Amino acid sequence: MALPDTYTMMNISGKYILNKALSDSDASDTILEQQGVGLLKRKVIDFAGATISIKHYKDAEGVEHLEVEPQIPGDSAPRGQTHVLTWTERTIDHPLFGHIVAKTRRVKPQELDEEHLKKGWTADTVEAGVIESHVVGNKWTGIQTWGIQEIDGKRRHCRQMTFTGPKGNTIHARLVYDYVSA
Image (tube, rainbow, N blue to C red; front, side, top):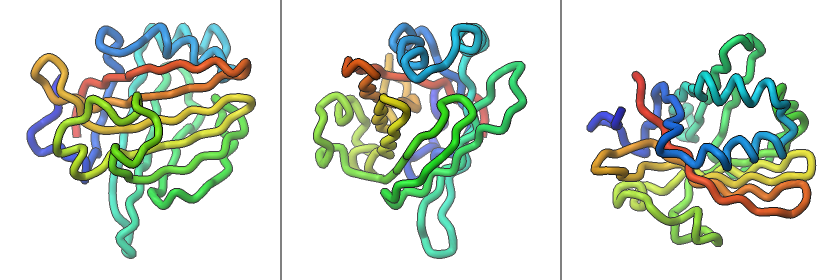
């Protein structure tokens, strides 16, 4: 489902499900495999679809936070992550990916180094800036930019990703999400 008219990059709160038909699903499975996610969990994620809930807010000091809660059917382990958009590294023991180091910020696309991460965004996303997430795991690195893209005439929450795997291979992917609810 397309994003509601009220959705902007300044408030990306909502519940979303990965649209496999519009996303680079094959790349997504390969990335999960290279991140050490086992075949059974990858199959469950692929079959059920990746659902995420995002709560976007500013704290009393005006610092942006994103509380992201992925939902994997049949798995009750807590996986929520809070992204603080200060570009400060934080260490996380993630139940799916293991030990990771992550940092997140809001940035204008033209300030990014990699062309794949800065293309396809709507004018209002370019103006407000994309959300950039940089994660280093066990022998892999994932860089994502989050924002709004227009696909088939509809505004959608999207993520452009560059993933470098354990053997130095690079994968570029786009993940497209359907908006489910606020």
